[in-house]
Image (cartoon, rainbow, N blue to C red):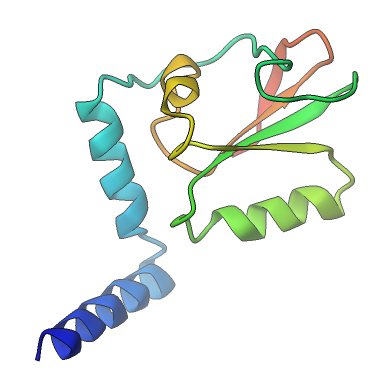
Length: 122
């Protein structure tokens, strides 16, 4: 019985996301981030070495979460466009999510080699 209820709930949530674009997981993440004290804001500079950048140059930093439905398609699109993408899993790096004001995923920043945020892409 419990399995059927959970399967129905997952189906409803998936249908809601497909029809409206509303991601329940994203909304839950926003609430949890807010409860942890993460406040929305604009990161002006990113420490690329802290994020594991191996080379110099322009990067796209994508903050993601394993349960994020929209993160995979955005990542594939960025790679297809030729961007070097640094993925930061906010479930493993909560400190970085807080430091860079990540209140929703996917959160994507285009960053110059000196760490200055050039543009927010998503």
